[in-house]
Image (tube, rainbow, N blue to C red; front, side, top):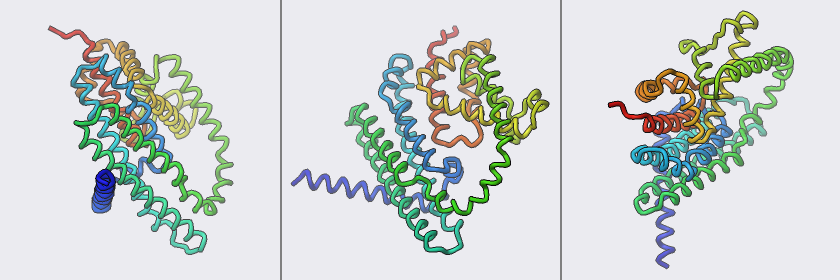
Length: 336
């Protein structure tokens, strides 16, 4: 009887905390940069799964224990919790903005459109509540962290994020696309007209990829190289040889595609592999100690990701780069 009462109280507390979090979300300015960057549930699902695979993996803590100073390991544990909560916040903002934007897009009335819109709203409200409950669960787990083994905390975070990812994948296959499918039939003709241009872009992408593979040792150095070809004022890429050979607009899109592909591969790397790539890159800069020092102070690596990178994957990469820097800094002999 006592255990039943405790379970009921815990469930009520979780629901109240979830409602409080949802109320706070609805009464604050929506993080439009988060929501607009994520865009679709598919990106959210990918972000959640990447956190579970490369950030919340218990093997990461084993690697840190063997290679990083104690304060870095402690900081990483805190960042794991922060990243889990941040990803759920981004998901809540994205779902809420989809709900808000839905009513503004379709003013024409039809029975099927109205039914689809209603289903869209029900599914997104359900997912929004699920995110609120997930955030409440993580908050409760964090409050009990002093009495809970570390691996048990990781297990809870993985189960919470995996559950939300599963619901997003099942209930939100982007209903908005099916609603506007009839409105987009006219785009088929236009897409056929640009097929030749797409083939040209694919050809340039292959050329850029082969050139980077030949000249540079790993994906990190290749992404940094592409980032240096981007004008941070306009976001456009410029390479003199490509600009002379192909249309500047087409070569710009091709380099962006290469940049995005390299970025996604880096995000999916384990912390150990990313540390190795960073070590190899610094070996080519002349002074490893000075490079590590400047990267740590200036954090210029934050400007190397492609435009349009979603905030969850960006935080995953930044977190791992910062920890990798701390590991490499600890390996550098101290200067006397």
